[in-house]
Length: 66
Image (cartoon, rainbow, N blue to C red; front, side):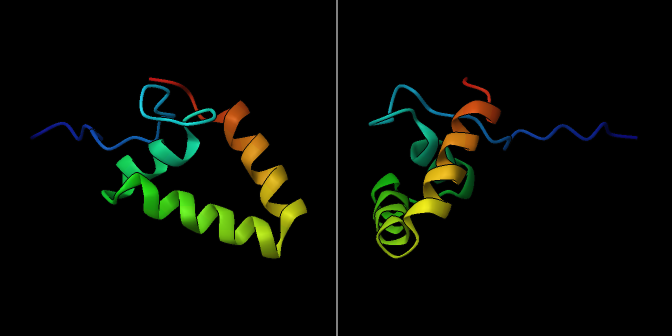
């Protein structure tokens, strides 16, 4: 029986990140370009700044760095 190893864990990518690596880590986790996640995050921040700001701060605190 093979052991299940999750190689696609969510981490903050501080090497490719612009601020704290949250968007770069999400992009790597979902296999998309980092600019796509960054544009989506900025667009979401324009429409819901309080929610996105709190979510981003929580992500910085809760998602481990690699």
